[in-house]
Length: 417
Image (tube, rainbow, N blue to C red):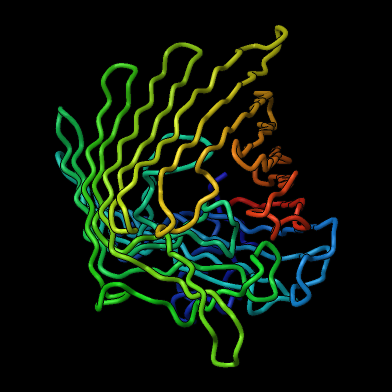
């Protein structure tokens, strides 16, 4: 799944998002069939290219939204790595091209561009990177280093690359990570004409910062992680500009009511714990945050119970249940996960095609909103994959009425290198 496809590589190289000289050098190497050496290092090229169709059953809820029922797009994420003895240089650009939406879904980002140095008891990453913290399935509370890319998806799973200096001290009693984050990335939002947006347009060109340093604010974080037997746990601290903006009503230059993102400086302490006990996988995440008005706590916890070899087959069936609590007040950025239950089923056929399905619902206990999620993937050949995703907004309340007409299906075919 990590070998280069010459045709896909050349398609990526034609992408105008890549600087011309860098694209020419890297893509020329990618087109080779044998491993290459560059600057005395071994060059590895991987990644994927995909064609995607997103389909909506209903007309949009707002007059200025894109009225297409089917939105085709192309995605490319090549991965270039240079390996020395114990050093690695990584470059991972990302781009999506929607032929009919150049100002909304068409976008690009550098997910990673970093130098990694490894030694016996420490490692160091310098550049643009991605870090993931957390254990829960349906909400990642403690994952705060990277900014969410909501143009890609509103589920906050896709992240922008973050400038960082990350030093990890590797000890028998655990790993201590120190992060210096020089440069803030603003959250991306669906464009003015895009689906899956609210009733008011978001003025991303005119954000509000609590700090006078604005996007030049230097954030910092610490993380401790360790494994003892069947238990994995972590503790983290973050000080810096909140990745969650508060959306403030304002009047634009042309007299429209819009929302301006307001970014405040926060302090967040987080813990995450996972226990693997036979068929049970117990998960818990919690945070305490100050800086958005009154300090508040939030937590997500639950389990996944796996039935191995269902009906004497090779398939495994996982049963998932998680609960979300969030005690933030009205001064903090809004969230839908204040009192919600997630229940799901994961089916892994464990066949040659690596077929998997996941379906679940998130139910708001207060408003009775229901979000239904369906995901499936299957390997077509050694390098081609097919994926289906569906997101259904059921029984929408006032809080989720903006998405009432936005239930959709995504079909994607990917070629991995």
